[in-house]
Length: 416
Ligand SMILES: Nc1ncnc2c1ncn2[C@@H]1O[C@H](COP(=O)(O)OP(=O)(O)OP(=O)(O)O)[C@@H](O)[C@H]1O
Ligand SMILES: [Mg+2]
Image 1 (tube, rainbow, N blue to C red):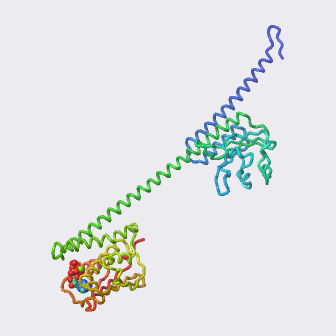
Image 2 (image 1 turned 90 degrees about the vertical axis):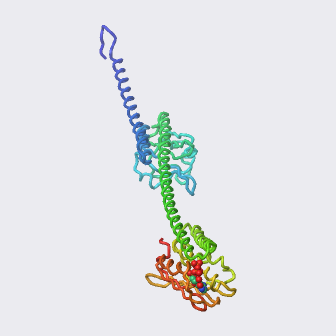
Image 3 (image 1 turned 30 degrees about the vertical axis):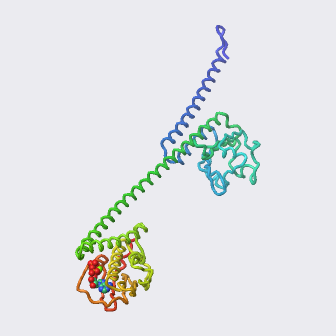
């Protein structure tokens, strides 16, 4: 100490001031580190859309701010075995340090975390009355990272859902104080809002994607509908024109035209039932035969493999069946009380299989070869043959009309 006779001694006050200055500087530096760490966390939450990165930033920041040696974030997962925590992010220790241990269970110590209620802080967790009550480990499993100072808080969403839990630990006792506890509460809030923000973004992205898909589908459906309406109008126009060509009177036109529209709409009904993907051959035929009393057994199905028709083929085959059946009812086997029609088909083998469809009338009035060619014959011999790239042959056998259609399967079956 320096003694001066003309004034007070300087020594102690200079040293005090010096110490205060050093302490103030240290506090300032600590405060700056704290502010830095907090702003890093805030920046990460604000700019990083990756949940893992954000939670890592929060846990790293927590380790730095609380002076912990380790930090971890566990996800709250609800599985078959009930709730459990799954390690998600670790700071200050390699992941392997945890790899061989089971995830924390709902023990006395961890229970508050599940309830999402309180922060658990312990100066020496091994001396804590809640510690070490559970089998098989009675506390931390052997080989666990050494933890004495212990700090733990739940990460709870605004709606009260427990999203997970944050742990901080240190091998020395009494590392965490009340300030670390307050800090942890703040960090847990940050982590919760980060998780919620990322979830929200993810949900929004999913919803947008879903909406885009629905719109895309709607557009496709509208195009498809437009296409179908155009096709149908073209068919109706052609039916009207061809019916009018061979109609002997307006009344006959009306009757035949209406019956053909009905036939068309029968097939449309079948196709609509199946989302316009196709229709079954037998069902297409039965829909056309039904008005002509299939129940009395005048149509004899003599067999044929199940066959799916494309919408286009179903419409064409339905129309053809309608012409055959109306002619049979007007002139052929269905025009008397005892005639019948045999219906059978087969499909050939080979690389380009052919459907052979046979219509055979029996026990009707004796048939003569007609001079007249009306809508029915034109549709069968030309329309159907052209439309489905096949051949149709009608034989006017005195015992009954026969019609054989040979149609390549490739022009009949749906594309997919
Ligand atoms: N199943 C049948 N049995 C006997 N004769 C038939 C049979 N089908 C058709 N014919 C004869 O063939 C002709 C031509 O038939 P097509 O279906 O082309 O004309 P349509 O039935 O007379 O008139 P449209 O079909 O235009 O209403 C008929 O007029 C009829 O004489
Ligand atoms: Mg006819």
